[in-house]
Length: 185
Image 1 (cartoon, rainbow, N blue to C red):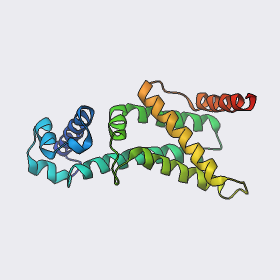
Image 2 (cartoon, rainbow, N blue to C red):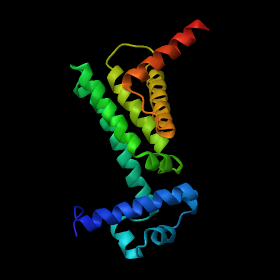
Image 3 (spheres, rainbow, N blue to C red):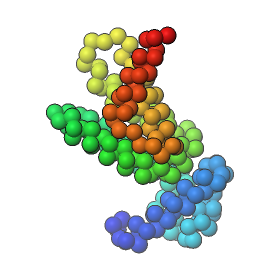
Image 4 (cartoon, helix red, strand yellow):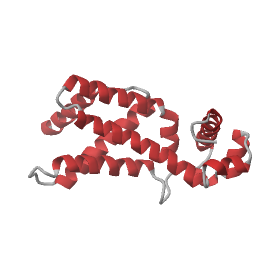
């Protein structure tokens, strides 16, 4: 069976959905393969046909979300000539990200040496921003990249948790207001 087979797609979705439910019920460290099998109503061979273990499952899901954020970041660069298209593209990506709310929130609960979505997202955003400013002769570039990554990730997590999708324009306005508040103190 290939990965495009409808049965494979349904089975993987069932495994992922079961895993997400389990992550909402108990910590990752307490989840066993048997828990996943029981919840998904599949046998052990079926699970191992798709994943090496629960870490592989979590890592693959983690990587999918990292790829999504990379697409969101890439959208900034590919359409800079038309700001309206850029805003639409980024807003579409943010909406897509919010559609995976339960997966995103569940994966945020996993924090192992190998799997840490929050840290992976911070690193991805930070590296991306650093690339854009590294050619400029600015002081404190590494710090600026860390600050930018922290702000973007905080906004993203807040949007997913509260289910309030902000437009890129609203995010920009919030950041400007924050800077204005800081200047006034």
